[in-house]
Figure 1 (cartoon, one colour):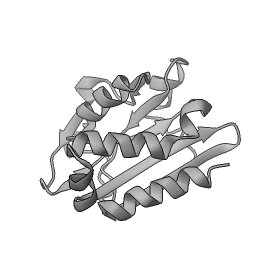
Figure 2: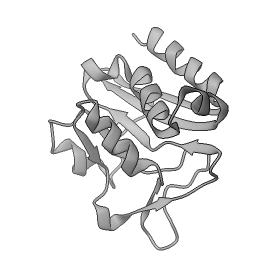
Figure 3: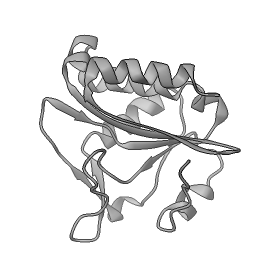
Figure 4: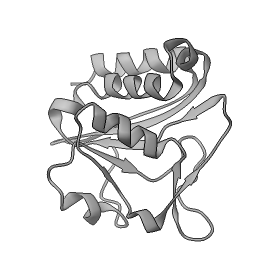
Length: 154
């Protein structure tokens, strides 16, 4: 289990108890969290992901204010999702399904999502700690893994 009380962003979202999801810094599978200019790195899909999550009725927050973050673009045939932290139990129990829906919205179709290379990382915060999902690979396989994550999420 990972601890999410990272000093640089804990105070930003812990003060807002109405959030369902927090977008965390970092580009999955790259190790990039911060740029040389000091800004926190978020994948270029993060703003669109935020909008799509809001369309699902979720209250979304960011770990850093706009002036402290930068979006980083990657290859067009790959989908790099922002790192998400699910805070509410009702949402967290179906986090894989929510993220899969987000992938479909960003890709534009099920086939495009399955054919793309996906880079996904999300965390589910529970009373007893944090459970993390990380996967990179063929979209079809990553989407299946997210379904298994929900099925085994106790």
